[in-house]
Image (cartoon, rainbow, N blue to C red; front, side, top):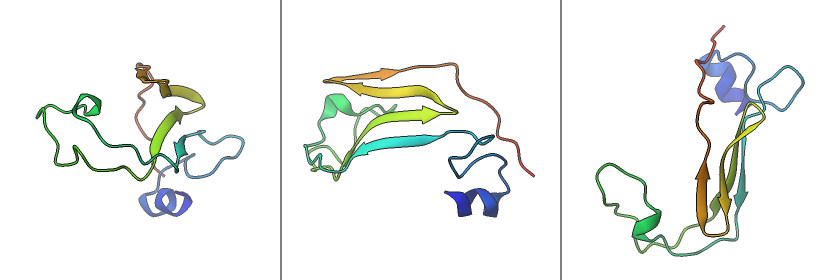
Length: 89
């Protein structure tokens, strides 16, 4: 993500370093469970991926050092109020 941040001119993103936003995702790459309908969050109420085996699962999303999503056993927990406009060069 360091190169993406440079290409798009986004400040304080792309690396884990003092003074930079600590944005990252923790993933279980061994999760090959089947995608089921009740896990899909979409306005259209359907997905072509239902029934597919996933190639990993997001366990936690951290935005600027704050947890904004985590998988807790069988529940998805979302934390709101962390959005912020991105600053460019």
